[in-house]
Amino acid sequence: MLMLAAVRGVSMRWFGKNERREIWDEALQWPIGDIEAAKRIREICRSASDSAEKVRTVVGPPSGRKEKHHAERYERAARAAMEIAMKISDDLMRDAAVRQIVDLCVSANNLKTARILFRAIQAASIREAAFGDHPALRE
Image (cartoon, rainbow, N blue to C red; front, side, top):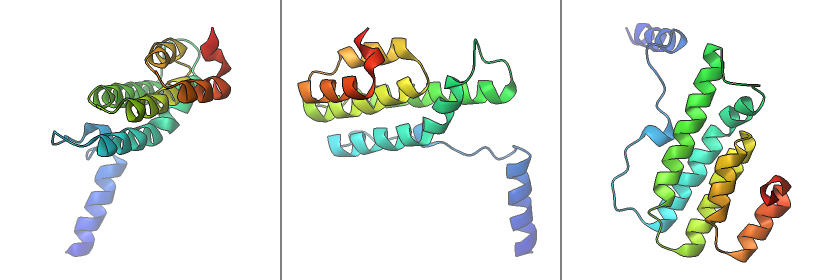
């Protein structure tokens, strides 16, 4: 009986009937501290980095099912991370978290959003580090 349940769980994942929940889809119990918020943003950016890399390679709007999936996944992750970052009260911690999101956007070749977010970073050291890693932000 236990074996049947395990096989059913595997087959449901294979056939897409049991969608995997992403970290950015999990509800947060507010208020959370700045450190926890920054940690969550870091986890979101790491989890979505593979989709961001795949989005980067697509020329033009995504056309295939997998391309659309990765584009939507990246966009949902970036949006969730931005919403959390807006609620961080410590300026330096917020700048570091926004830098993580900038890196994610650059990975997806979404330079328009990356530049907008970059302008929100106030700490000179974080801005310079971002310039060093992503010279395209200077434009």
